[in-house]
Structures are given as structure tokens and as C-alpha cells.
Image 1: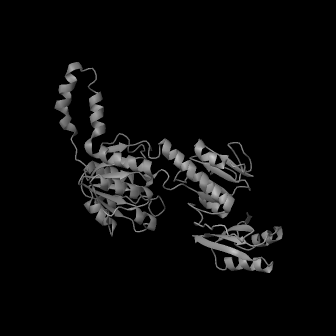
Image 2: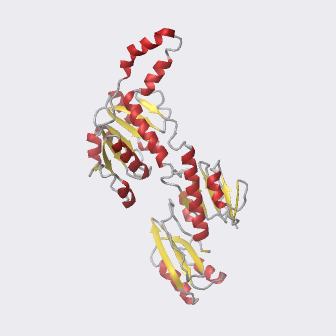
Image 3: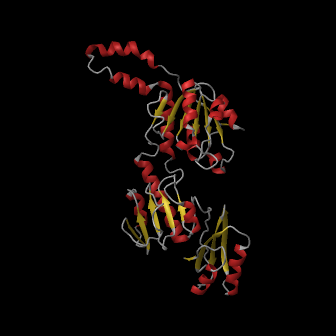
Length: 389
């Protein structure tokens, strides 16, 4: 029986996927094989030897020590795209909020409380202070065409905006989902110079941290409305505030406000509401549970942040399956298969994939094996752990 430890309030509909008689699921379970969580931090948690995988019901994994877990053969999953529609809807709302001065108008209208019969004429007289441009026909530039960026592009185009996307690393899947009406930018400078609105949809990595700096901001069209629903650290706050005060940046809408940005004119701080929908929470939990089940039961890896995508359909001629996370160094597969050959174990099917410093091998074998073979495989220099399913 597999033991699943739950942190945070993960949607019960997702956890119900484990109710097959093969799982014990609880917040109190000890020696878990898998962990499913949302924002709980695992950085200070002692890792039980039993732990095989962690599934984050969400996209960000800064609450998980992914590098340390990779070294120990613990696969970390996230749920990219599960909250994409929720974030997309908030980005579209941000386009309107940054244009039509809706928030300012609502706040002003509320300030008229107590004016009695004068409210209607006061509104008619003061409404001209809150005029703003329509989004239709304006140019939207999207930096990053992953799950969210593609959705924003397609729906903004459907609203009548002229949409251009930039992503030198766009996946084939994302490219297939893009509407034909979306223009492709060859360089990021095309996005910066021509867009009335710019929406950022790139991951936070060492190479993208602080990417939106003084140089990038200076290349943007004057008065541009900048939307950040990816990560706060992508934008250098001091450079942004300087550009806002000069009027070069017209509005900044972010889902990641901090003390520097709060109360600043032309900043719309949204309290991290991107995935705050019941549908999004259920989608994330459901996806995380499926990833964990697929790995524990079949050894397959999909949507891991520290190991490669690696899936192998069961072979009808196989008796057992071996899964082996190992270092991505030469001759690993050769040593593994040679070890099996020495024990006269025939391979029915296998797959090997690599990602950075780590690789993962799945092998379906035609006859049952024993502990001696597992020990010999584990002793190969570079093998991190061996599991028999």
C-alpha cells in the first residue's frame, strides 16, 4: 500500500483519486511514499527514506528543495496549465482595469455617499475624469507563449486586439494551440517598441530574474500598460518606479505587490488572485494526484521540474518494471543493461531520458528478478536509487 502525506487544504476531489484500496492518504501519515501539497514549505523537513515523489498542486515550486530532492532520486511534480484559465481571465481583466480607470471611478463614486439627490448630477459632471481607451484595435505584446500566454493571446485576439507573441522556446503543443491571427515576433525588441500593452508570461529562473530592467523598459512604447502575472522578481522595482514617474510606463498591473509598489500612482496591485478560483484549485489537485499515481504505480514521469519527462506504456510480455533515476553521465544505460544480461534477464522494452545533470530509465523485464539484482544495480556508480514495480 502506498502512503500519501497531505499538506495544506488540497481539494478532496483530487484526493479521491487515491481511493482505490492501494493508498493510505492523511495529513498524519508517517513514512510516506508521496507528498501532495500547495504552499507548505518542505525546506526544513527531514526527508524520510521512503519518499519517492512530491506533487505540488500549483505551478511554483519555490517551497520545495528541488535540487536536493533530485540528488536523492525524489521526483518533484508541478501542475503547469491547471490554473491557466483562471490566470488568463485575470490578465484580461487587467487590460480593462489599466485602460478604463474603473477602479478609480468606483472609488470616487463611493466617495459621494451621503450626497443624496446630488449623486446623479455629480456623477454626470465628474465621469469625464475617468475616461480611458478601448482595448479593441490596440496592440498587445505577449512575452512567453506557454499555457497561459497562448490563452491570453487567443482570447485577446477574439476581443479585437492585434496580438504579437514572442517566445524563442515555444513548444510544438503551444504552437498548435495558437490562433492563426497571432503574429510572431522574431525579437523581443519588436514587442517592446510597438505594443500598447505588454503581458509577461515567462518562468522565473536565474536567467530571467530582473529581466525587465531599465534597458528593457526604455525600449517600450511611451505610455505602455505593463502586466505582470508571472513572478514579481522578473521586474526590477526601482527601474519600474522611475519609468512610471517619468510617464514612460503608463500603468503597471501586478499580481505580486510589495511594499515598494503599494500606494504608488499608476500601479494596480492585485493580491495574488491569479489561481484563486475553486475551479483552479480542483484542477491543480486533480492533476497533481494523477501525476503522483502515474509515477507510483507505473514509474512514469510527466510534468516534473527536476527529472525528465519519461513515460512507457506497459509491455504485455513484461513481468516487472524497473525504474532508475541516475546521473546523466556516459555509459549509464550500458552498465545497467549489462548487469541485467549477466543475470540472464531479458528486456522487453525500455526508455531513457535526460534533463540537465539527471536522467531516468524505465525497463520492462520479461522475468521476475530478486534483491541481488537490485543491489547490483544500486551499486553502479551514478545510480541514485532503484525501484521494482
